[in-house]
Amino acid sequence: MNGDDRPEGPEEFADGLLEEELRQAAAVLDPVPAELVQAAVEAFALHDLDARLAELTFDSLVDALPVRGVTDAPRMLTFRAGEVTVDVEVTEDGLIGQLLPPQAARIEVLGGPQTTHGPLTADPLGRFTSATPPSGPFALRLRTGAEVIVTEWLRP
Image 1 (tube, rainbow, N blue to C red):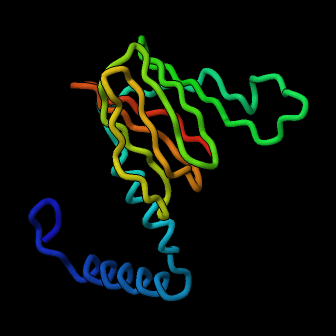
Image 2: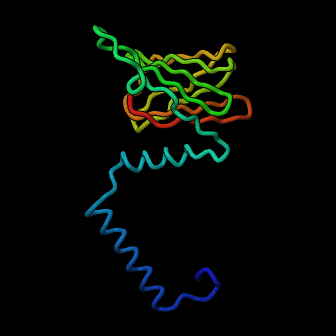
Image 3: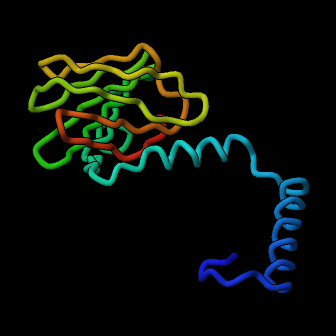
């Protein structure tokens, strides 16, 4: 049966068979890499209709003045969503951050297939840390009470 409750005729049946054969041929001859499928699944899981996007307002790689003699300075990031500001320091040892105004929150470090980050918890002063640095593109998802905020995606 098709969408309007009419029985399928020979043409629709043949089209369905052809489509299935083409899908099988594409799966064998040009398979979608498992990493891409995983990234697509994770990207779909990130879809929060009620989430506010926190815009990147400061990135030390772009906005800071270089300091002579400092070779591996931590990357400083600032995101803003309305009245909420998220400051994050990215180092080779992990992440250190704070929410302003200070508030408790649950924070997820979103990343690719190799992500091993567990959820982080911001204390009542808005501070949070992770001992695992991001290994690829990442974003943060913050849940502060009833509000969900997602930062822009960045490369470490």
